[in-house]
Amino acid sequence: MTDKLPANLLALFAPRPPLRYLPHCDYSPDKRRTAPITGVAAYLEALRTPDPNYVPSESWMQKRDRLREEKKAAIAEKTKAALSQYNPEHDPQVRGDPFKTLFLSRLNYNVKEPDLEREFGRFGPIERIRIVRDKGSGKHRGYAFIVYEREKDMKGTLNYKPLPPPPPITVFHFFTPDSKTAERVW
Image (cartoon, rainbow, N blue to C red; front, side, top):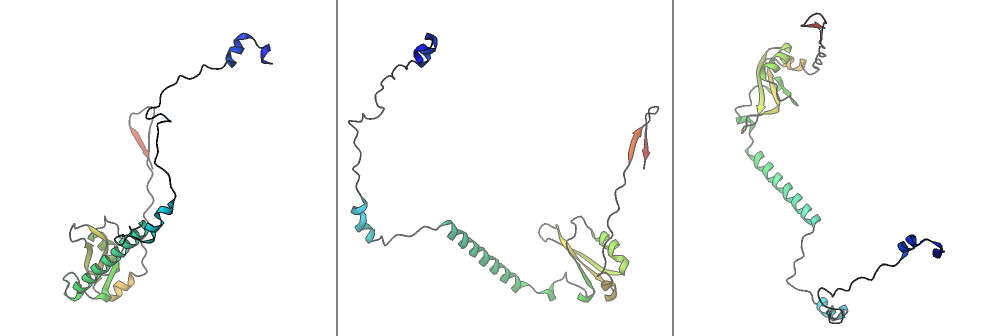
């Protein structure tokens, strides 16, 4: 069938010339020698008598478990030391009757004492407000204590839910074609 093709197409099916011979880059195959290969039978006796100085390495799971246990032990030791030093009767910051004290948590870090006094002062006279701060950096820790003068004032705050913030006011500015100033529409 290919004999009926024209010569220019037959040239496409012609074999390529043979590759040029290049000598081997390291050793020729007839001069190459490899190590003799044997089975494991020669090593069986060595495997039967293990090395007494061998220490197995720690796997990643064992390391993870070891580090976890070390961390638990360090936390337990730190907690034990902190509890041995904790004495609320001699803490100068702890003042007031616990039955008149309101605990506030999850406070915004921008809240100040006047904000708390304005929000919770409506329930009764406040004796003291303490926002707890970090001793080292002085940053707000997110919780506070409010001591009221009367116990019934503190109990009045237990069902208190703050009002949601008012919706934002949308202000539209537009220019009239005849003026260069903007008019405000509420």
